[in-house]
Amino acid sequence: MWKKIPKPIFCLAPMAGITDSAFRLVCKKCGADIVYSEMASATALFFKPQKTLELIQFSPEERPYIVQLFGKEPEHFGKATKLISQGVPLIEYSNKKRYKKNKLQPPDGIDINFGCPAKKVFGHGSGAALMEKPELAKEIIEAVTSNTEIPVSLKIRSELKTPQGTFPLLDFLKKIEINSLGISTIMVHGRSYSQGFKGPIDYKTIQDVKKYFQGIVIANGGIKDLESAKIMLAKTKADGIGVATGAYGNPLIFNQLKELKQAPAKNKKLWTKKNKTDLASKHARYVYKLKGKRGILELRKHFLWYFKGMPNIKKLHPKIVSINTLNDVKEIIKDVDKLYKT
Image 1 (cartoon, one colour):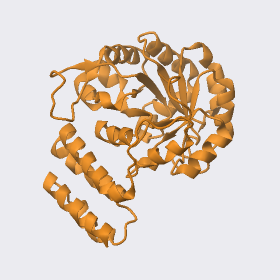
Image 2 (image 1 turned 90 degrees about the vertical axis):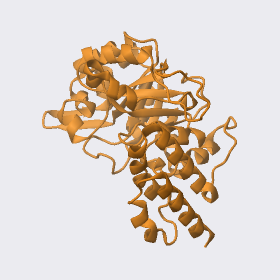
Image 3 (image 1 turned 90 degrees about the horizontal axis):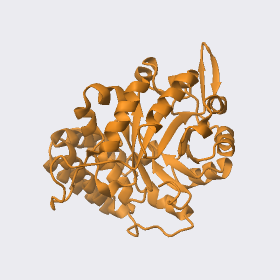
């Protein structure tokens, strides 16, 4: 799957509370090559899988689609991997009803989270905390790769510093003998655990990983536009980039990045600022089909991101943060269209 996509590969990176099926599909239609799920708990899938399976449901239009798992127990990862490989629920956004109820299909990849800096995740011993436990990390990877034929990837940070010491990424990869574990791809967030989501990018570490690792390397962190993507690729020699917060309200970034492709983009429709309200409307329809009223409430943050920076948009903020119904969404779109015209 990874090798079939022309380089550089453009991925929508996994983000908790953001990369649900509706947002992934919007980004896919704007040109993303690969999309990742929100973080899914391997432990939840081990004990009570139904709610988490709903979290990672997807539309076949999103393919290639990767499910990301987090946790700290190899046994939980093993069972979760088997379950996902058997298939996760599908959602049909049109009214054609092509899929039977409870229809399942496997995703195109499974990703293991070794990079999340969230205090709740880190304090639990998951995410970036696993970088200081290479033996456990290796057991987790083996539990996943031995229970699926789906490509397995990692997402990880450039470095971890704790009172117990400093754990550079390259040292970690050498300790777990990454090239012998059957991992297809590594997405490297070029910031340390302590940096979180701010600060300079460690381009050298990503480049060193690219030289050492025998698979695909995706560079992540600080990608906001075409120029930052060019810099990342030039300094790291990575096979592609992962876009995270740079896609907030701006799925259009993937169309912009297509300029870096040697091969022509398959998606010929070019979304522009002039039809950004059309894109926001499409997102609203998807998220309502996916989550109902709960999805409409989640649109508040997305709409603030979509229309950020527009002249006079602040006067619409009270209406945007009060969205409750699809009719409210339609009224906001009309108001924004009027602002565009003025």
